[in-house]
Length: 259
Image 1: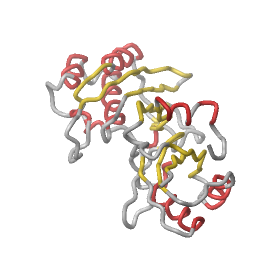
Image 2 (image 1 turned 60 degrees about the vertical axis):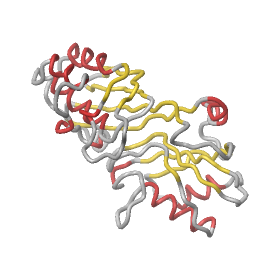
Image 3 (image 1 turned 120 degrees about the horizontal axis):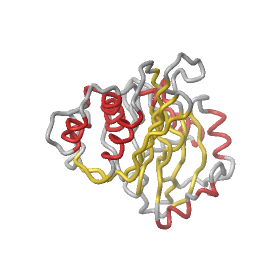
């Protein structure tokens, strides 16, 4: 059966997470509901990167199988039916064995902290009014790069056998009065980015010594998940694919209808 990737973006404020759950509103549940109305059949979606409730995404993916003919107006009609905080950016025909989660080669997240009350940042960042030492933030972020066991930065009860992630980019940038953290890795654990940010903020405030931060990264100390940064500051910026999928879902094809 033909397989498709569907690219979405959403504001996570009103959603109780990415993956479908009973009773509560989720990104997957809302998209499956609208697709069932439009196609007049139930289409099950498989997600690429789960995000917590309140977390946003500029780019995320599902895949699905259907015998229905995917026409160029699918994106238009689905967006007309979806709520304003959830949008379909494209639908792409992919090889039948393609998997939007397991074939992703990296994910990139951005986290924003701002100091002063700002109505335009409300819901899109963490308002943290205290000064942060940029040198300490950068040093802490640099230590995150590489391959580590991030079990200390993972929410408890997560059913994974392997806590090792390979972080390819980890850097803080100061933009005016804002601090923006950018991190890219082959995979992320549940709560990992928010926990990293919460821990680094403590380092930047001088409340967590650098040696203790190193101990956490090297698995010699208890978990830092108690320093979980607020969800609204986190955005899944991009999911990257390689090989044939990288060509199908390329930079030049953003904002197109159906490929």
